[in-house]
Amino acid sequence: MKFVGNLFLFISINCAYSQESFHKEIDRIYNFQLQKLTKEQKAAKFEELNAFFVKIKFDTLKYFPQIRKELKTNTHKPYFYYDCAHSMMILSSNPSDNNLIAMAFSKCDLKDIDAKVFVSLLNNLAIRKANVTQAALKIIADESFSFYVPEHDFYFTNDYSLLYCLLPMDSKLYVESLTELYYETTDLAIQKTIVLVLWHTYSCESEAFLKQVLNSKLTNPEIKSYLKTVPNSIKSSVFYKKNDKKITMKDLMELQKASFNRFSDEAIADLNYIAMTRRKKQKCQE
Image 1 (cartoon, helix red, strand yellow):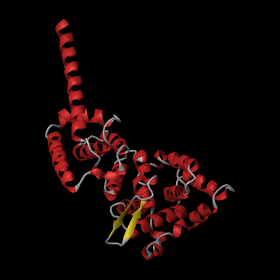
Image 2 (cartoon, one colour):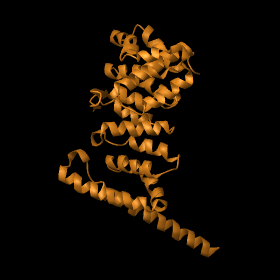
Image 3 (spheres, one colour):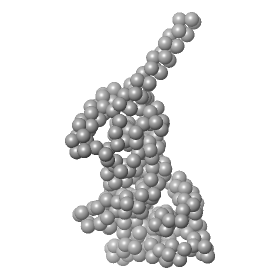
Image 4 (cartoon, one colour):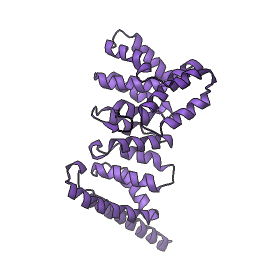
């Protein structure tokens, strides 16, 4: 029994040392802010990061437990949380990692990351049923967050970006956070974004909130006007309008799923159409 106890103590100390060593290695590798590096410095750093990725890839059994622990910390540079979470998203087949990855993304610096890539990653995690709310709310706080889609000559601004991140999730995971933020802020741009997302959500909770906003004397007239124009912000396809009666709820959900596979004004128009048609075909979802 004494031997077993000593062996357990030795393993525990060794694991602790290994984790501490890994922690220091991360601090050494991720000792930068990407937006402050020159083109040459970025090239050199990406080579080092690629080597680190390969190291993890060929021994995930050893490194995944250590990475999971480090992603839960708040002590590293922001780019670590993005880069290693992204690596785990690529390499891990464990569904339980998805929420950890989403939480790690909430600690990154958006200035370090391509906006389209960030939205795509959160959208993918949301489809995997991870809760990306906290990470997605970084977008709403940044009015400059956007990306250009040259094929459609269309800018995906932060409101549509937030929509793509949250809408694939169960609305219960984000509606309360958005309604609380609406009342906490006086920023009309943030309030409009929240109204846009909740109008597309169409749940009993979101509809009750929007009704309250519309009827309240305290609501800024600009918000009331915006809420009334949301359905017509981007016109829906004529094809769908002609086939409203034939469209089923299953068809609508398939259309929504397909819409998230592309970034375009047509995709936004489809999401508008889905929200409007759901209002005609069903009562709000409990």
